[in-house]
Image (tube, rainbow, N blue to C red; front, side):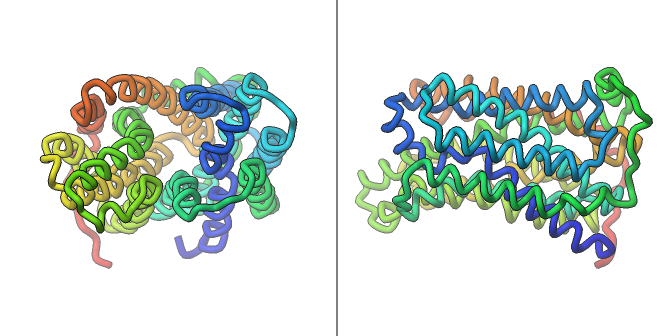
Length: 402
């Protein structure tokens, strides 16, 4: 990683700025719902539209071959610029809910040119041992996910349009940072294929890639659904604390707890990445997937008056739930031919994010009626993910010296 230290730093910063477009409405959700007179369910549809747009964008990248045929940094910068314009239109134009859905879908399409291609740029500069750098990259995305909750916790009083517009400015800066960077010495462009969807799907015939992808899909079943339900779990925790008159816990807020739990994943990604320099990424990913699954199993079993323990378990869960993500991407990237990496990561991300939509809908449907035991809906993710990645774990661990 030393040879590409500055390029990696620029890519990580650009990725953080670019992916701030993803959850930009969340930082002003209450004001936005009031201004548009929409319900929380309709606001959730805005987020879902972004996810569907991302899926559509990844499929287009795989079909068109853009992820591998053209300069990755230029496609990344183009996606940042287009996403910034669309996001600014969402913030400033006099539109309604339906137009807002269309704009958020379009922003999601642009994000497909930012998130997977940011990972490809990292691999281009670092090579096959990309676990540590990808850990930092996904860690910054995790902080971006937590940021809206942090803004609410600080009580920012900007108009909602101004809050959303900040992400557009950041995205333009992010695209500018890497526009002239180049794609690094470890990858090469595809050989001019005009249609690469079959090729992108064909990487699933490569056994290590398939195992990593199956682990990633199990991880994705759990990750975003957990992040989606964290505010509900925080509200439940604080309600129990008030009944017990526990003033230290009551002093916290739902946004503050949500920010702490989600942003704990930043540390998980970074520390997991560092560990991957000594232990193969497969073992790091498996350990994180197992730990998050155990937290999922344990949390509904905790007594309602165990406030401190429940909060600790949520923080530990937040730490591990995303720590495996960059390691799965590192394994997938090193398992396929260099000229296929962009399309392969795009199609893997697209399938993974489609899975998140299903798990989010199913989990949120049952939380109000079943309570915290609905969290067990997420358990099949870690279990099936670990089963799917078993072939990657058949070699000795082999710890390298620092």
